[in-house]
Image 1 (tube, helix red, strand yellow):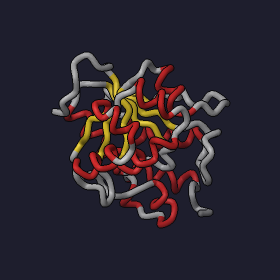
Image 2 (tube, one colour; image 1 turned 180 degrees about the vertical axis):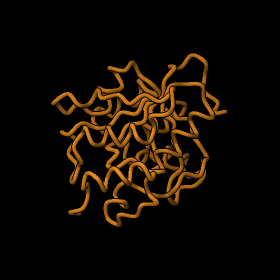
Image 3 (cartoon, one colour; image 1 turned 90 degrees about the vertical axis):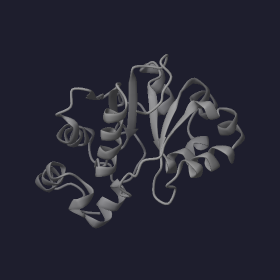
Length: 197
């Protein structure tokens, strides 16, 4: 089990564009389901999220439902489909500060996020190793390299778990069906998504 203090929220949030959702997202959720007793909230970015080649929100939600729809503890929340760009900090506030999942790559970028100081002070983070950052020690080096992250070190719960080193970007570039689940791949084909990349 992942060791988390008892007084924390009953939910864990995994946010992202999920453009499309990949087996890496699936592996993180499966780990959290197995190693915590909390609900997992999947929160896709709204269409106003400034990212190139973003599939429409309803289609990304459908892909998430195809990937996670069979689990009672996984909820797909459409809170960011509000017609305004609000950013992670506002979403976490509205949801009353669930634990927030990050990959090592996002941990590196965290100081550049909107409202970073408040985001860091008011929330707790579960961080997964990713890519060439494969050990907890790698994550600690990132935390210790930034004064604000280091000062709030106790806000991070580090997961030393091998997650497939794949990404939504890699799928869109290669169209490799191994990066997504079969159900998601069939939906992508049926909807003609990402074919112009």
